[in-house]
Image (cartoon, rainbow, N blue to C red; front, side):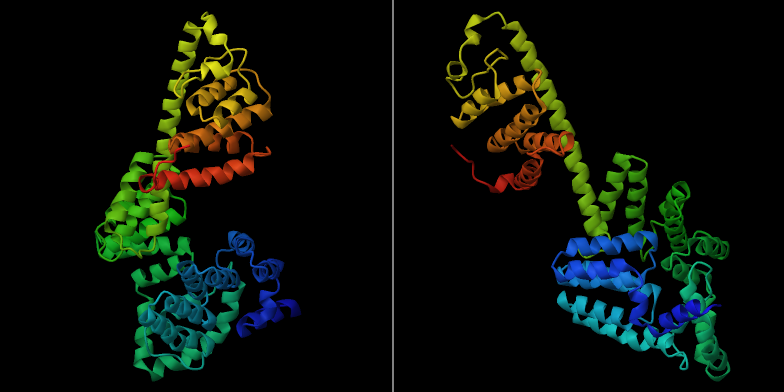
Length: 444
């Protein structure tokens, strides 16, 4: 081993800041954080985790940023992942404790700090082997792993402590034996992302306990993480009766169906999960967000279909009355009443449609914009007409149609001058759609 590798191993064991400074993205994230640009900082840490999901530096940094954002659940998740991959990180336990305190859960905060004297102490002070269950998990984690140099560096340090402890303390021996339980060992390996090693352990459990719902559940999660979705689905369905985490199987099944574009099955699994999930359940927010997204997509698709059918009918009616010379009058005459239909004529123009809209003739202006979209107009005129249609629909409280039109502008003309305005209006329309029943009607 050369001097450079020796230095890195030593730095990891001591937890020095030099290891944290190796990746420039940590420093860049800190700069963003100092400026209050938290999302940009998180972007740096996500990039690091995309390369290595066991990167505890990135989890710690992300946890600290989430705390500043007052996203305490997000911070808690990052801190727990950090000490899940390195149980000697005292700062991670303390971070988790502070997150719980911020959420008003002092008992859980105290429990996190208590772990500092258990898991963290057994890893940081290997000369004293704790006589509880925690060293069993540390024993599994300290096993050498090919892809993790840090684990190789820990092994020589942990071995001397484990050797004298076994003959002196029967409790320590029991902890080591516990680490050999295939169920617990499989869970520990799964938590560390060592899926190939965890997978055969569930078969071992099932050979001893046929039909064990817990083994099926964790086997399903393991196969899901390995990308073996057919096997994962089979196991998760059998794991639904697992008393401890069976409902989580519904969430994983929904994720599998999402990947297979099986929307009906995905929605059914999400509904089953949300029906039983506690308010603070691990996957509840993600499940609610996905369910809302599915419903929004379905509503938008239905609205777009209805709108196209209405536009087709309008064009058909317009062709029938195309010989009516009275329809060629100026728009001001054609729009004498709010609901009067304006057919596509030579007088259709952005300027005239704008004038109608400004005078409060929403329906007439809307029909003129639609007619313009059916003709050859410049890209600038096209996306402006679509934006104005979104504005009219929003004013008419037809928020579904407004969302569809704004999305069309953002999707079809992302680099246009009006794309930013469309994005802002889209967010507003989505909010209005969700709260329509709470709002008074706007009258011009």
